[in-house]
Image (cartoon, rainbow, N blue to C red; front, top):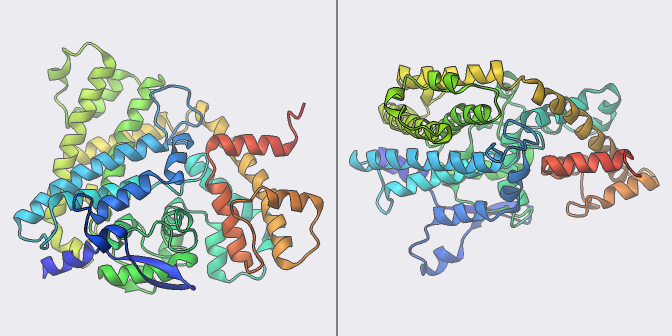
Length: 451
């Protein structure tokens, strides 16, 4: 039973959009079988890495907006590091699955590692400028009294999608719609990779989206994800909500490890945290005394970080296998794998997250830029949403409207667009910008500094 379940969960099937319908797709590699060293999951990896959305992560905020220090993480370096940890986690679990007789014929432990690596690489593709603050800014615009009029004519589900910008959902939209085969299935990744990306496998209208403020599936991507979920055999829990793919828990754990530990390194580099505080957090998983001989602080931090990550990887892989059957059947009831990991790992990551909240996330050096992001992104929506609304509803376009629409040349509004598809194009356009591009464009459009 487990082996057949894993055979479905590791599906290499791909889907595309053809005349509005979700149908099977394929790749040249699977057609001719010539490239035996490049698996379907390697193809997924390459498609993500060579996408423009992935490249733009290099100028998107991880924690510190517009950080000038060379060693400070951005979304690109964060994603690469999460993918590295995710691959190691997947490889560990893959070996254990093989040893337990769970791995289907034709698959290797490294296939598990690559699937998790792909999902980790792609997990932040939908993050807007200025990170989570950018998400809040794009949501806040719709709460202004005057802006509610632009929602007339949308269904309740469409209103939820448009007014609750969610980076996780936009990551999935980027993969399945915006990159490569635009509006025709996007990158057309394997079902296994897409399923592993679904940390919140429900729509914006599901009650869990209200409870948690998180979701992965927009109405525009729902038909494709319904096909993917069926292909993978994901357990249906209720209307348009599925049990998570087991490997999504490894992606989540890799992300948690990296942002908890690596954000602390950034804080030390920026003098927001002392070296002593950094060491104290890691005492549960690192023998600090054995590293005292490393005199260079950066090298010592690197050594401690490496040991801590290695400890966490081994521990979480054990937790995954301990709860293997629950994960496989959709009956895993805990928040995440960290909740069932050892006390040492839990305490270390919890303490790291807490000190980040206390000393990093609310530091004055961040707050000013985060407040400014509301004005920046709000100004852009002030221009684009009214212009798109006028165009689609057939109202006379002002000169300003026409000029604004010309800025969206890569995502033009077509005669067949509805208000929903038009607004989603605005969110694609604005949300896809780098921090630098959004700030520069807002400044230019405001008229400030014209001379």
